[in-house]
Image (tube, rainbow over all chains, first blue to last red; front, top):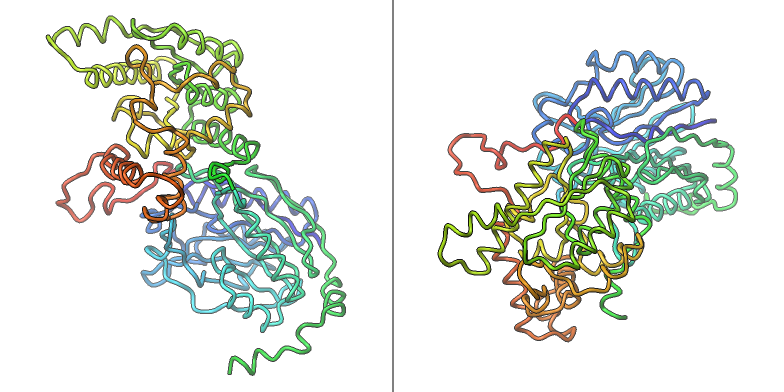
Length: 266
Length: 276
C-alpha cells in the first residue's frame, strides 16, 4: 500500500485557498496511485489562528470540503481543520473515504505552555478512538496528543494497526537536541512497543517567525523509520508499506500476549 | 563542560532555516527584495549573507551609512561583505542630516547623539525600503535585544529579523560558517557611534559572559543564585537581569489604554502573517 504525506505550508486563515491546495495534493497522490494521503494539523486554516479561530472554523459538512469528499472515492484523505460545533471550537481531523466522513478526531490534549495557546481558543476532545479503514484499525492523534503516554496506551488497547499523527510542530533546538529527535523517539517507541505503523505528518512554512520543520516520516511496526521527508520544504512524500509487517513484528515481539494493563487499569 | 559549549548551534540547519525564514517571510507579502544597513560589524555582515542566499544577490541592497566620525575600517569591512556577496550597495552619509539636527542644540551628550545617528539610519533604511520596494531586514541579535543595548525605533527597527534569537556567540559561529571576512570576525565589537567606542567596555562585561548568563537565566530557567554559582559575580548577574527587566519596553509595541471590549494586541489578537 502506498501512503502519501502532503507536507505543506498553509495560508493563515484562508480556508478556501488551503483546501484548494489539499485538493491539488490529493490529485497528485491519486496520480501516484496512493491509497491514503495524510495532511498536517490545521492544514485547512493554518496554525497560529488566535482570533481567526472564529472565522476559520467550519462544520464537517461545510460545502468547502465537498471536492475533497468527492476525491476520497479515489484515495483516503485525512487532514486537520478547525471545527465549529454549537458555538465551540475544536482542533480536529477529518478522515474521508469512499466519499464519506468516516472519522472526526478532536484533539484531546491542547498545549497552553510556552508559545502555545490552543487551550485559550479550542475545547478539548474527550476520547482517543479507533476506527476501521482499509489499513486495519486506525487511530488518529493530533500533535500534543502524541506526547501523552495515555494516548499510546489507548491506541494499544484499541488494537491499532495504523497510528496517524498530524502535526504543526515548530522548530527549536539547543546544544543537546533538535526538535525532531523528540518526535522520532516518540513515534519509534510507540510503533515498536505496540507493533503498528506510525505516520507522522508535519507541516512546513513560517508564521510570524515560527518555522514548522517538516521532516514527516513513516515508521514500521519494528520501530524503524522507513523514509523521511525533507527539512522545511514543501513536498508530496510517498512511502510504501506492507501491512503484513504488523503480523511479522508481533510474531517477533508479541507484547500484547502478556499484557496485564487492562486489569491494572481496573 | 565549557559553559559556552551550551550555546553551540548546528550552523548548517540554522543557516538553512534562517535563509528560508527570510525568503518566505518576505516573499509571502508579495515583495521580493531586502534592504539592510551594513555597518561592517559582524551582525549585519551575517544578515547580508543570509539575505543573499534567501533572495539572490540582485535583490539585496546593503546601505552603508557612515557619519563623519565613523571609523574607516567600518566602511572597508562593509565593502568587503559587498564584494564577497555581490549584493547591491549604496553609501549614504548621514553627516549632513544628523548635524543639521544636532547643531540646533548648543550641547548634546553622547547618548543623545548616538540615538540620533541610529534613528537617522532608520529613516534612511525605511526610505530606501520604499525606493527599492524591499523590506528592511533587522540586524539586532538576542544579546543586545535582551540587554536593551540598542536604540528604540533606531537600529532596533526593522520589518523582520533573522538573527534576533541568536546570542552574540552564536552570530560568530554563523559568521565562521558563512566565511565572513576575517577582519570582521576578529575585530572588537563596536556600535561605532563615537571614536574608539567598544561595546564590551561600555557595557562593563564581555559578550561571552553576558551570553552565558542570559542563556542560563532565560533559556534554561536558572535562578540568579544558580547562575552565580557557575562562577560569576553576584552583582554582574543581578545587573544583567535588571537590564533585561528595565528594557522590556523596547521589545514591545507601545501599550494602548484599554477602553473597548476588543483592544488592539490585548484582545484583538492576530498574527502579522494574517492571510499570508
